[in-house]
Image (cartoon, rainbow, N blue to C red):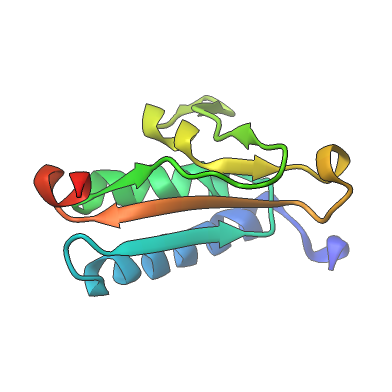
Length: 117
């Protein structure tokens, strides 16, 4: 698997993930919740995907707690900048929790009034 990893592959997967998350948000009723989680640390597949959906759809990332040590989502990577709201996502690093690593975000679907509920 690692032999197949390339930046081109990451960008291809990120494009698929943008489509999946966009469809999930579109299929969720206003006020509903979508959880986005990956098992990668690549910002292209995490924060960049969230940034795309925040720009394209009516939704917001809402704060949530995890019973693990986490780091916030990053707002800059490789010359790209992302919406500050991505800091509400959680990065879970293996060396902080003696676990596998992952990324997760909780999105509330709808306009500002619906998101606030």
